[in-house]
Length: 384
Image 1: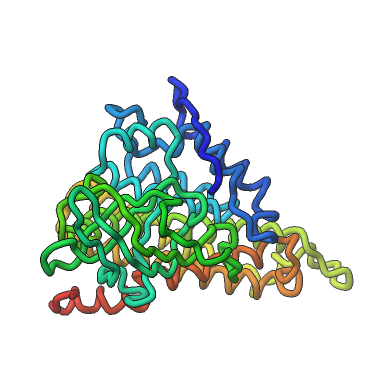
Image 2 (image 1 turned 90 degrees about the vertical axis):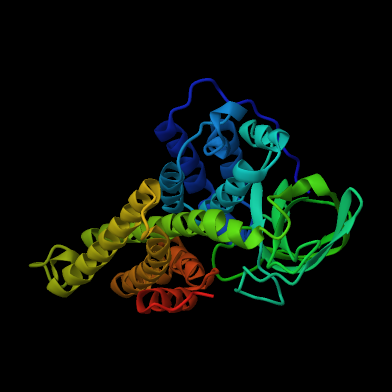
């Protein structure tokens, strides 16, 4: 397990300055993180020392008490530089949303002090992308529970301080219960490093639990209340922040594509100074810009709906994740097409972002599941 640094949060906190500090660290290390499939340690260290890990922890516990919208702005900016860094921070904020609502005071203070990196441990081999239906067990044993599970993917598996973990209830037949399971607990086995197509530094790995004992006080919410917490707390936070990451990648792809078409010339066509002088190229770039602006408008509108407690907020959350994922993937496709052979060269940066955009399409709930959910909702069918 990686060492957990202990950092005190400075008294003065400027969100924009902190965000740029972390974004620059992400930019500096993004190429190496991707090439080596290495955890973005320098970026997360910058997030600790700048106070961004404490962004959404309440001020009463030493955090900054900022909103989900603020967290989204951080993720969107960091994702423009490094998708893996944005993914790790997304999972931290999603896990911390549960800790803020149901966690112990000492854990919340640790998050505020920069001593706790959180993540979600929902996906399982048995239920796959149906994260709301865990098959893992938690058996009550006095003041402890014993957990057994095969988690298929946990982001920051080797680096998280603790996992927000789903299981079947310890008693009764409700859908699920949530727990805080310490990273490195006896009986946990991380099944190898991540060597995937995209988001190569997010340290995502299968984790097996065999006879893992944790205190009953590590339960997050009531026994059997996990499904409600997933739907009301985790799903909106995760969906809005994974959308932020997708839109940050899309924004960066627009920028890189514009830079390419403005600086690339045809030597045998002196009447045209650059690729951007071709109407077909301009049309492609315009399509990219419009798609990103439309998806960002929906994203911000959904924050409005959530903050106002509107009835349409849950539906808009589902729409936003689907729209952001599809937009990022489509913009990446156009970027590869417009930048041509140069897009395949790693130093241009487009192919890394192309690979990273694929992830949000298949992260639960997947885009296909979301379209089914939205279709059910607008036609009057129950979602589950």
